[in-house]
Image 1 (cartoon, protein in one colour):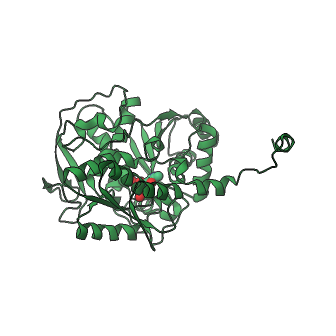
Image 2 (cartoon, protein in one colour):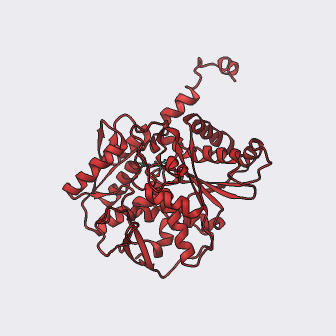
Image 3 (cartoon, rainbow, N blue to C red):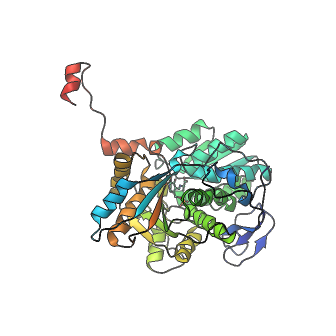
Length: 405
Ligand code: F0G
């Protein structure tokens, strides 16, 4: 049994606390988060990664988890990236760079950390169906965990704008997959209403329990190398940056660590509401009405968790950055070819952000930086073929092959 902590849901705007769990928003309209009031910590930060449920004493569920052995993802020291940063900067920049590869999760993205907790909560609350809107990865992961739990899964996708691998996963795991003629933001608003009328459990990142699973990214980083100076990650619906920040805050609050990394969010130029808000010192976003980027996972104009994310950035002394599609695709290639780490375009935004912030002098010498690569290369094979071209084709003879070596 998990060692569940004493917790409640708490509004980030008005501070109201709720003991009921089957809600997504405060009555005042504010976002909710799980507030861990007290916990009996049964784990140590001893470098021994055993997955999300190692940290069950800080995870708010009361039943045995629906788990596919998620988490425990590799953290790579990337010395070639360090050299590239140094070469590109004007002032001999010396930074320690790590990549935490969340593509190594069971469905190939970080969403599995959230879904193991979210689907467990669905079962705990007696739900018979789960639902989400998705740019792809959330749907793949939710479908997989719903299959494991034996409950129904309903998925709304922006038709024609989801990478092939992700659609394939949602279909094969048995979700009802519905493409809408609209973007992610519209799909999310529709699915929220459908969940309300049909009694489905909503598993987008507006669900505070899902983010609890994702905070274990922070726990694993601290477990393996201690608290870094900076964490860089792509921002779409803005749940993950909020979750990771919360994770570091909890470790500090419970006396396991004594600092918080600068939370650094990277968005695509064509879907950059959080970047623009932070640039203008605002606490909320102006929506981007027609978001567009090659990184379809983060093609989001109206992130629901924006207020949490912007707070995380300000409170931790971090920054937000934007990168072009070209910078994203170059970073994807660089990481694949120079470090052997295969990621999807959205994930490469974190590497593109690292390089840009290094060149701008915002990242300083001596920093220890962790970039989160959120999803696996195989999620989006079509973009890869567009970038790299088709394989060479020759007749079946040794001569023909030798000619093209
Ligand atoms: N990277 C990848 C690969 C993603 O799939 C997502 C989000 C993000 C980054 C951004 O994370 O939303 O927490 O800021 N994908 C969601 C989905 C929206 O539906 O799969 P975020």
